[in-house]
Length: 175
Image 1 (cartoon, helix red, strand yellow):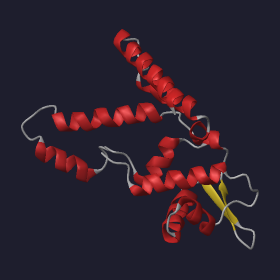
Image 2: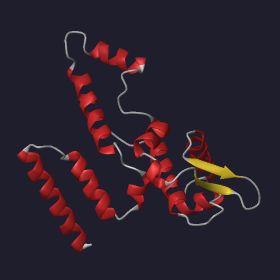
Image 3: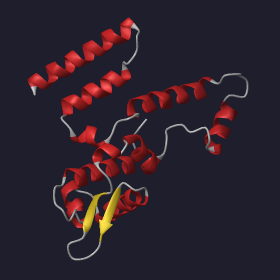
Image 4: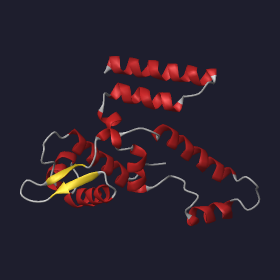
């Protein structure tokens, strides 16, 4: 599984705009240079981000792109859905048809179940994560994600969470 270039570029551009403190915003050319992306790719991503209400543009000599709302109001799940959609969406007929052909002899198709589980796991991690979370300290973001993954009453999950958080502390000390 891969995050598409469109999703990656779109998130990078959104982060770049969020981290900029100028009142006028950033131009396509500035973002292109800062992120080492082509002007056409930046323009395409900004169009998608603007059409989905994540950024706004101002025209003119001092025009540029700014966030349309505060970073804490921009959900990462919504951004990724706007940029590329979901990994597995049963409402899309082509996926369902392909999976049905692969699963003709079983009641509960293993492949479909796998995609559902993966999508539910991704949704669980992304639920409530905002652009502000990405902007904040890296350690806090990592901890937030690990807690989402291992949020369960099962003792083994709790132990895994503790081990991962401890490893993150150790890797930060060595960097």
